[in-house]
Image (cartoon, helix red, strand yellow):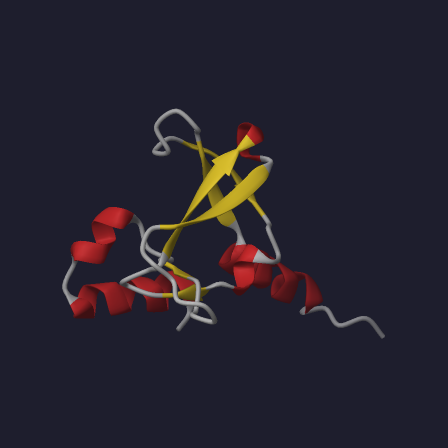
Length: 102
C-alpha cells in the first residue's frame, strides 16, 4: 500500500533543498527556484568559504570561492541571505531553524 504521507515528505525535501535563483545582472531579483542535488550537499557556515551564483538564465549553478580554501578543506556556503549574516547569533539560529529545520 502506498504511503499517504509520501507526497508531503517529498514536498518538505524539495522546499528545504531548493535554491532561490536570482537574476544574473544584480543577483538580487528572485526569478525562480531550482533543484541542484550536488550543491544541496554543501554545508552551511555563517562564515562561508564560497558563494552561489547562477548563469545561463538560472540553468547553471556556480560555486565560487570567496576566501582561500586549503586543499582538502570544506567548501561551505551560507544558507542565509548576505544581510542576515550580520544578525546576532540567536536571530541567525532562529532563521536556520525555521527555514532549514536545524
